[in-house]
Image (tube, rainbow, N blue to C red):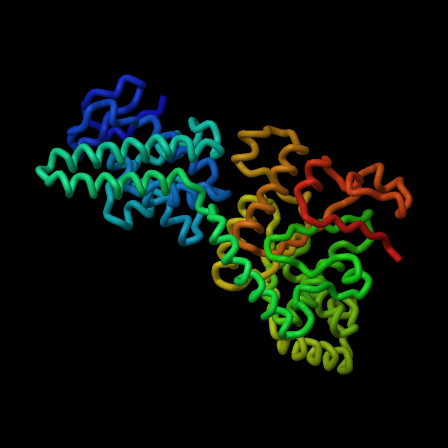
Length: 420
């Protein structure tokens, strides 16, 4: 059972289900049946379980600080959501530091960690938050009734609280039929505007690809697969170059190749000066001139490529970082080189242990959810499995991509190619 911070505890009666006492800075004016401290702890713990994912964002959508009975839980909610909004890591140390910056009494460093450990999973965040919200609404209604307000004032207040409760229960993505019909024209206007500018900037660089695959739509996830040595990274780099030339903002996440190697490869592609020559220290004047011309030409592109080196990152961490870029207008397309290099997050280790297959399926699900939620196009690459490597190209199937069939079932497009 989770212990409350000792300096914030008091000696009020629990609600009979193992809940812990309220902080001493707050008095108990509600029946125990209207207080569920354990649900508050599990809601916060669930959000912390998904801190590398989107737990804090969902927490902010589901609850307000004043929904918690315990004052320290209100402060903890504020800390979690503030750190998430600022793009900072959500750890016991950073939580404590944020609380100190707000002149709020320090929490024991272990309390937030204990909440996270005892929560079963971030999958249950909505359930626990729902309990907290319903009790908060009931407490507010009871307080209003005891305040001496008129019957009309109480009735109006009850309606506002019911609306808040129903809003909590409803999906933020819900659309009425009439709204969906109205949105048809918004969708058509989007594509009309895109078409008015000429060929779609989200098209592919190669004619043969455009004949088989549509330009990227918002929220689409494309998986490119090929055998070892076919040049998957080069393909991804060329895609990034092309889309930046079309005026798009491309975020390129690379797990293996460091920034200096990426710079050398890009310069070689656009200047014709080999990587070996660039590193030799004996470049000719002609080679330096070619590199200068390439740099000037790249600088004139209408769009940009933003590189982020991600060794050891999880898919959760990558999506959270990409969300910051997306909100800053720097991520029309996310390119990931490449997917199977993602490390397990603490959430995944807790859920899947050392099992790679379900964890990699979860990686795909995480990235797909990110793409859909922010309407960002995502392109990544992966290896062929043993069967795929031993199969002739004309007989390759999506099931021949490394990992489970559940992996490829979650993407919108699977493209398999071979070295020509």
